[in-house]
Structures are given as structure tokens and as C-alpha cells.
Image 1 (spheres, rainbow, N blue to C red):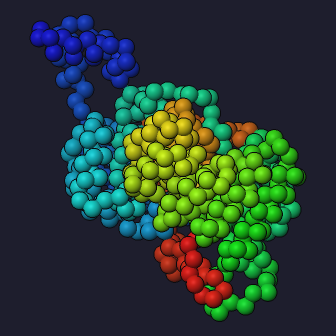
Image 2: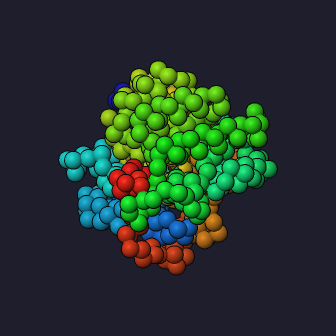
Image 3: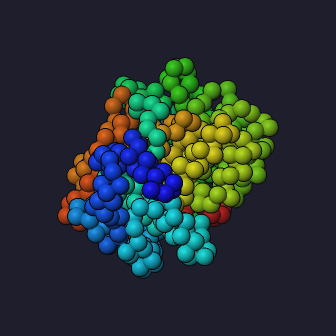
Length: 444
Ligand code: GCO
Ligand code: MG
């Protein structure tokens, strides 16, 4: 037996791989038989499952292999442009991948990412994410292990999460927060409505005195800034010191207002302030840092390494919170987590309703295996979602628990999914515009 061959033989027989091929290999002959008996699975089909059980469009990619009953699911949800992700998968990635082995996840990720020449856009990244996560699901199913085991195992028992407290008036937000606290949550994101305006995270149907020069949804950033700061003051007083407060600024203020907001908010000792700036204004993070120590979370709109790398490496943020499928899936997100760990930055993956339960399981897997986990955003699954995606992560006392079944642990009932198709909407699931009173369109 040659040296190389002997080393390989030892590896196959080693404890780590035993779980993948639960056969004890004693001789070269047995080795040959074992490897013959377990050929690499090959990609036989790639399909796209679309559904809308909870108001937002969800997209999941399914990879079927040539091995009986071996398949996997990956989240590819980009709800505002959902109809574009499906052809990106079916017309481009599917012909590129058919008959390739499912064994080589990293190689497939790199070659898919590169195959469009132009890259790092939301549609293509989501399509690649669907493939990447489906391959991790398949590998977990082959191993008979949840994906968190393949990524090194748990750093913690369960995942500390935050709920979305909201309301039209300050007291409504306090009541909503108290409901989360009563369920065991230690962390709440608080958002208050703006009378007669289209604020983010909360609605308020009331009137205001502003005369708008248009009939579109209205928003005035300066007013939002003052009302949201008041909310934080009230929450800190009424919810007490033991509760962690979070707030999503949703890139709605001007860069200078964002600096003011973060500076003023410092006194309320928040868990974090989220997305104070838009990706176009990243250089202003330095000004925020120079003015205050409010913890900053950023990144759900990021698609490219050129966006997250400098912020992490220059320690300009405290939490990186990308939308995992927007960055291309579990594989790149794991690399982001590891990069961030080196710089003392924690994770807070984007986890709203427009992430499928498969994607939430990928988030929770990253939360469990990353030492530098910070917090997880939590969105409740309704019964229709749970009927489609069997095995959704469970929430208990403010902690999210991973499903312990192999892969992501989720089975999709496609017949039930077909009963919740994308609903017709004038903008086809896209967002409309929000404008200041003079008619200027603003970021939302
Ligand atoms: C959040 C987000 C979401 C996004 C939504 C866009 O932090 O939860 O900002 O609510 O607005 O995911 O589709
Ligand atoms: Mg957000």
C-alpha cells in the first residue's frame, strides 16, 4: 500500500469520518468495497418552490440527487423581486449544475458565483444561496446529522432572540414589549408609529398637520428622529434596566441625523441601534464612532464583501447582520462570522418574515456554531407556514431551539405550499415609494 493510499485508508477509518460512513474498514479490500458501495450523489434535478403563507413571498430551492430519497432545501428568498430568482436558478444554475456531484459544496459555490462573470447582486446571490444551503442540507442528511454538527457543533444550548414590539403610541409599544417579556424574552426591538406617516416597523393611522405636495406615503426624517428618541427614553424608564433595547433605524435618516441619533441614544444603554446609515453612506460610521459608544448593528442590505469587510476590519460596527441568502448562503455567511470573530464583532443575522424557515434554520445553525454570536432576530411562524415547512425552529422563553433532525431538519409539503401561491399585487411583491412632504423620495 503506497503512503498516500495508507493515509487515505487511515482517514476513512478515523472516528470523524466513521459517522459519515458508519462502516468499520479493516482491510484494503473492505476499503475498496466501502467506497464502491457509496458513490457520490449527483444532481439529478433542481426545482424552485414558491409560496406566500404569511404575506411575504418565500422562495426555496430543492436539489434532488440520483440517490433514492436524498435531496435538500435552500433559502433563496428575495421577496421584493421574487419572480427574478426562479429563472436565475432554473435557466442558469440548473443547466450548469446537472450531473455534478453534491459532495463539493465550496467548489460549487465558487463556480456558481463566478459563472455570471458580474456578481454580488441580490438576485444572483439568492439563487446561489438556494443551491449552497440545499447542498449543506444534503450533506447533513447523508451524515445523519444536523448541519451544526458538520460545522463543529454547538457553542451554546439555544439562541437568545429579540422580538418586535411595536405600536401606534408610546404606551402601545410598552404593552407590546411587556407581552414579549411575559413570554420570557430578555430583548425587545421597539418601534413607534408616526401619526399620519409611513414610519418603519409600526403603523399609525392618525392625522398630522403636514401638508404634503403629493398623495404617496409620507415620511419626515427629523420628526422620526425626535419621536424615536422619546420612545427610547420612555422604554428605558418603563421597562427597567434588565431589558435589552434594540431599535431599527432602517436607513431613514440623513447621515448627520444618524450621527445625532446614535449620540443621543447613548444614554439609554441599548443592546444595539440597527442600520443607522444606508450602504451608500458607510463612511459616516467613523463619525458615529467618534461621537459615541452606542453599539451599532449593520448589514441586512449588504450583498458584497466590499461592504462588510471594511466595517468589520476597521471595527466600525459591533454586530454584523447580513441577510444570509443575500450574501450567497451558509458558506459565505460562515466566513463572515469567522472574519468578524477575529475583530471582536458579533453576529446578528437578519431574521424577519421574509426569510423562509429553511433560511431561519441556517441562521440558527450559524448562531449555535459561532463563538461570536450576538443575538438573533425572531419572526413568528404562523400555522400555514408550519404546515408547509415541517420542523420549523421552536421558540421557548425567548430562546430559539434548533431542530435536531439531519440537515436543516425541515421537510416541505409541496402540495400544501401550492395552496399558498404568490398573491397578485400591483407591484408584484415590490415596494412602492415613500416621500417627504415636498415630494422627495427617501430610502425606506
Ligand atoms: C428587519 C428588517 C426587515 C426588512 C424586510 C425587508 O430588521 O427586520 O429591516 O423588516 O424591512 O426584511 O423585506
Ligand atoms: Mg432591519
